[in-house]
Image (spheres, rainbow, N blue to C red):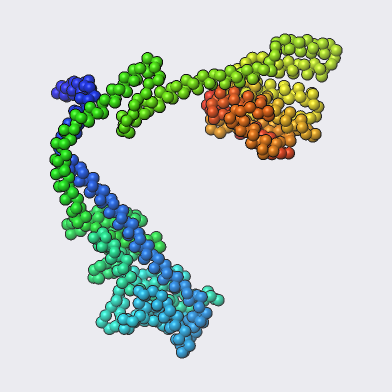
Length: 608
């Protein structure tokens, strides 16, 4: 049975694949248009519902963060107020003074009145001196306070917190014999500035009406209900006053709110809700907004019904235009295929007439750019070969009949040895080595070691010519010695450094060649401590290396730079840095040198 189904599917696919593009498009259009409307409506409904939920959740999360941020800033202000007694000399003096008098009462009450009026929501401010005398100031509407009933609790909390501020959640306080008011409290022990000993406490009660102005706009926008609990899980704020102070630490309302911020779904009274929460880093209080999903998704159900009607309306119209669209799409493709066949026959002057910016138009545009790029590449290959031949000719200009000169120098060296003239013999021997090395083409591949040996022969020849004038030092890792490199790369640079840097100064100079790797690239530097050059001359030289234009200075460097770039790519080449009177550094980068040479990276301090 499975085999029969597989064969049927294969035959159907082959039949479809062998249809013309126009017929394929008609079949695809018909198939897509006749998809079950119920599936389309359901998918759209789910997508839009998730989008609305995500958008509402993100918005509610942002508003929750903003609400908690306002509460945090308010509490931060209260904490700063509890520090003010440290900076009031009169308060410091009276808190440590036993007993009470008119001056003490007047000064302390004035200070408490100032604190109480800094915030509208502050119900009362208390201050306890070193001898448990309580001073307080309450706002209008608070008839009577009973601070001595709360003194023991204040003492325990401040002693546990030492010098830190204590924040307590919402709790009731008596304001007369039968009436209570819900507040949260901020308190701190007060230390003597001179002795650092505790000399009292300051306590601030804040009415929870503070939360009304912050939370109500959030509930209005989200159509939900907001809850604030402290770090112990007790309710700090709820729109239902009966819930204030209730312990929700084990409630499912908080069970999933374990991160610093987030959202989750839950059922409350059999109805689905989306809960968005945020935890304050400074207070540890947690703000949760419970949004009813039924009300949130009600507009989406109406949208689903409208979408089904719209789908039925456009179904007939889509079927009518299917044939026209398939013809319009396939016509430019057929034209492009015809042009491709002409390109296969070698005709490169063809071009697609692009009318539209759709995918077919983009295909035609890319086809035109591809043909143009092929023509450019052919021209570039031709110009590259011309440049390479020119570079080789420049490199061969100094090789005038090298075989004849080398044989003649060998004869001179033999005569010098017969006459015991060792210096002339060594000079002719070194010169012969240099000429022999230069006989073959400049793009012949040698090793780095052979190239360095050629430079050393050249420098030894100059040392014989200019005794005590030139010294050199090669700091090349041994692992680089066997890497392949084109000939005559270092010697023209060294020659340029000597005759334009060292020869122009009276004191001796040094040529230093170093190398290191950067990923697959190898960096060589040829440094001389000669006369250097000014910034204008340096900029002109680097520009000539970059654009290849002729310059009366640095012809050898441009020759090397051009051959290196032709052989190793555009990322390779020379860069010159110099300061007048301090010397010159020529940096040679060979891109992909280690990858091409298949050599491991050198070990540290493995210099020859």
